[in-house]
Length: 164
Image 1: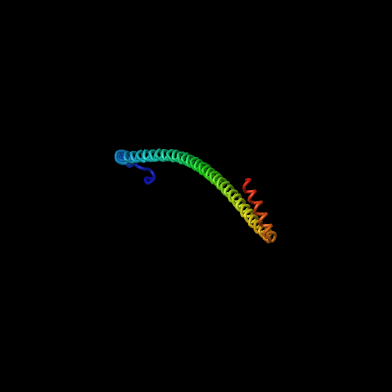
Image 2: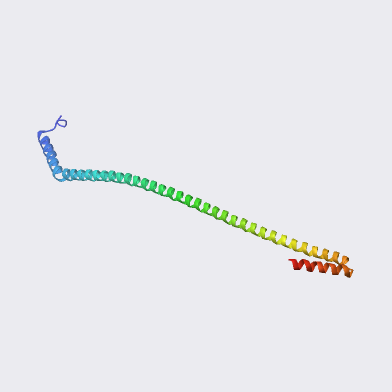
């Protein structure tokens, strides 16, 4: 039974070494381990804080980006509206110019037609006069083959000329 029951000396020295080991561990191991754990805890906490701050910054940047996108869309819409207005104005100006040019061309064509009509009428009158003179000449030649008739016609014409 001696093997199963420990002796008092063994219990004393085991307890003494155990407490001595606890003191040595407390002085040399636990303080550095606890300090390392505290440092690790502080670094994890600061990392979490910086991650939270980065998350907040990202949210702020995202909201700023959305705001910038909204402004860009508004500016694009304003530019598109202005471009449409400019396009409509240019088209209207071109239509007005085309209408003015068409009116000028129509008026010019009317003047040309009027001038050509007047020239044609004058030419027809001149041809009618020439034909009338030729017909009258032919008729007079036939009638005036005799000298008595010629003398009578000449005297009538001279009388008419003196009266006018």
